[in-house]
Length: 247
Picture 1 (cartoon, rainbow, N blue to C red):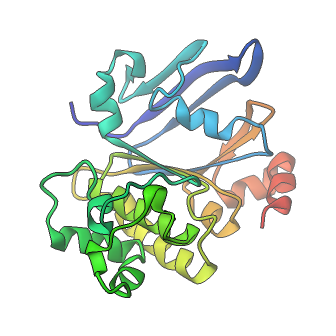
Picture 2: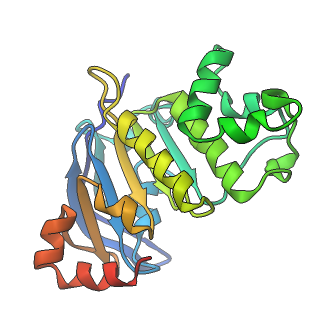
Picture 3: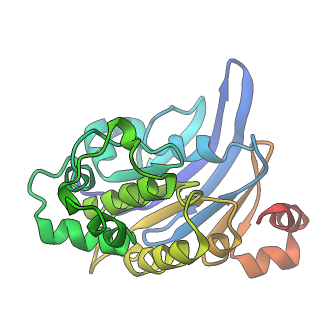
């Protein structure tokens, strides 16, 4: 079943071994929204996104995708339409083209290159003697951290997920390259036609937080405020304190 991209948390509580990580979290992200999640280390940011694709299941409350509890979705159908890019990128000892197209047997070279260009990866790929056919070592050890992240972003662009989760995914990328990637992300964040993409961003970079449609402010596992940057700067002392520490 195709996902439209509405994500709702209803009074969600989750913890590890009786230690609460998220407590009574409620919000709705509409299809096409870009949602930034901010908070101090340990506030539950990554855990929140991991409840969407069922890496974990809630202790109480519900996580809904398009109004359906994620536990009632076919898990393969759900996860096939959610793409997560994390700081620790896993790549395979295949060619660069095969890594970008991983899981998409029908991807052609033109679409692979288009995704790589959007992710600002085309330039360094074509700098290798073998280009897109360059074999990389296990986990991409022959690439720099920034190059690995751009390959993962290209893979996400190519799979065209309805829900995209970016968890510190540009931490190893220089600011100029990140700006180019952000522009590409903004272009594709609305998706094509009737298929908008819902994007969740966890980052310490102010430039990414500012352009989010909605920002969720977490403090010790609780959602203490939400809204766009300008509104939160005016009314939320918690947000101003967090924002002041970000780079």
